[in-house]
Length: 363
Ligand code: WQD
Image 1 (cartoon, rainbow, N blue to C red):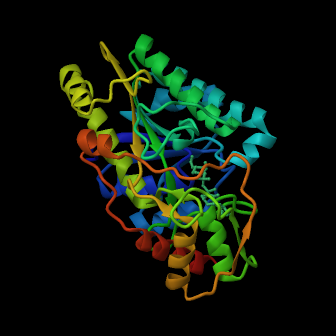
Image 2 (image 1 turned 120 degrees about the horizontal axis):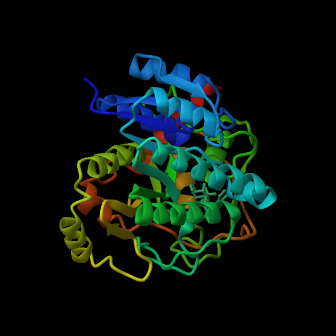
């Protein structure tokens, strides 16, 4: 008997597919709804090899209200993990309308149809990009919010949308703010496959390791960091996936709904602040939480570990800083530990090893 049946929107994507593996391992049933725009159906084959069954998959877009209405009329879901959305910072600057349509209109359509069907629990795929660039790391959930690109803005707007529905419609939301997911499931059957030129560091480094690309450009070595290169919080994608299970179990168990416990734990964490990281009223709830390792790794360090793991030279040159970049971003992860009992377990090297295994099996 499954623990619950969840809807995974965008479940063929990088984080969604790894969360599907973690859900199966934890005894959950799930249905994947994905428009296939950023994932191949090869992911379904990979999932079948890992979990032993072919996941139930609906090729649809979360902006299609009728599809959602029909689905919810015929299937009972205890909740939704909402991954569906576009996620490239650079692309969002070129195509803001697509990002607002997919990420914001898609989320509004999903929430409206879910509430109409009586589905009130949602775990949302948010991002550390909602934090203002002026913050000093490690970042807490009540740090100043602010965005500098349409991608980050749509994530922040959807958080605000969800908070409004929590306050007025009784929606119960956990918003998970990802830092920098990297790596792949240990089997190598699923992993990160960006279309086109990778915008993010790790997949680009893997392309250089395979010889697909010539060299890595290090965007500045004059940052105020220990070795002058950018510092980020790289979290193994399977740790991130397991963080979703922990978040769902805290939400579905009613733990987060116990207003007093929740307030106490928040106060203990002294998280009350101007940017409300959490707000509870009656049955509605909005709770934002970081998912990271709590450790910062520099560009040079990640390239060096990748050289050791792959055995390839991975040439790198120093170039100018990338517009919009900041020196250092990493998470304060104490809230996830206190409230969900979750911490990242896997080390950076394992993420590189698992990511390299996936990459090697792809070429
Ligand atoms: C990491 C570091 C760069 C590429 C992303 C996006 C988004 C978010 C995760 C979910 C920085 C440097 C990069 C390269 C480099 N995910 N770099 N050469 O900038 O933290 O942003 O965070 O929301 O995907 O917001 O990740 O991998 O692009 O950059 O030197 O070719 O690597 O300057 O210091 P970032 P990133």
